[in-house]
Length: 60
Image (cartoon, rainbow, N blue to C red; front, side, top):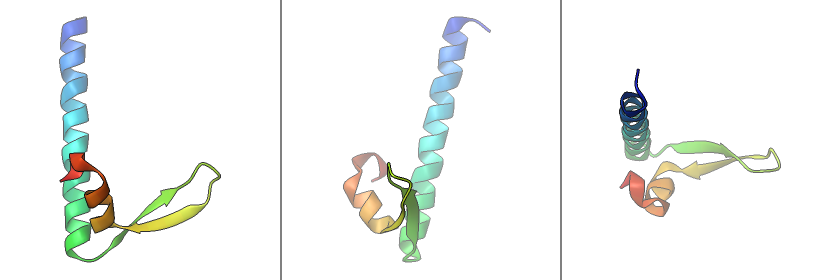
């Protein structure tokens, strides 16, 4: 695989992951669910999916 083909493949994978994450967040928001995250100190916290969407333009 050439460098150009590899870069095209990487871009397609990134786009697919972003689309999957966006779909998952919108489905969770429709059901009123939360997402689980971890901060830098290892503490787990929950955020409403609708708040994650509102705070990140790439998910809208």
